[in-house]
Length: 276
Image 1 (cartoon, one colour):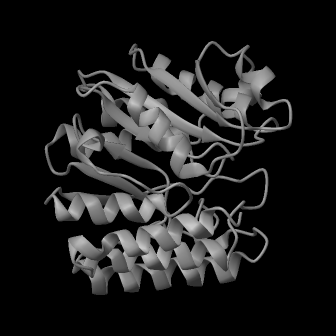
Image 2: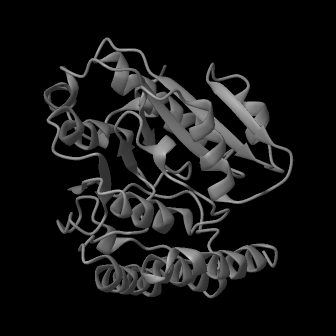
């Protein structure tokens, strides 16, 4: 294991301060599609982080029909690999991972493109340990320190438009749920035991991040955000800015629809998923 490959972005002391009293089973779910260029580095950094804690963790990668060498690489990394034979969407990959987990597991989700830093995992787990939250979201917008992993300095293609879109969804989310969340679309999250299994998740695509929030608040689960370091993605986003934004918007508004009419929005969203 080379130093270059796994060198942490924050100190081991900070990792230990955030996680050394966690005494529960932890599973990490990573939905993956064509991440052959970045997945090895991400897995090694997760393993490095937990090795410093002398704690085991199960890493579960869901390969969502990759057509590059991702699956071949994953087979060599000593992790749990679940596969979709064709690309079904991030939502389907996450749900497959959730179904694999046990009710008593603490679950962490993060993306496979390198934008989320595994060294921040203790930050997300700490509110769960202290019983301050049922779900913790890693917010890219709470870290505003220029040059220190701030999402505001992200140089992705159409990054400014994406940031404005994320902030717009936060405003819509506040109107619908009466709960202000700065980064509703962050995929870096931690869930306490028995939380995800009580959510009635139907989404197939990126809108699942929104559906989780809507479902959780309807069940009176407590959601807390923590600031995270913004890593460097190895590719542009797979999100379709128009189509996926529409699906996310429909999912938000399902939060104010009567339960017997929600199927209409879910039907429309499902139809749009087939357009991908």
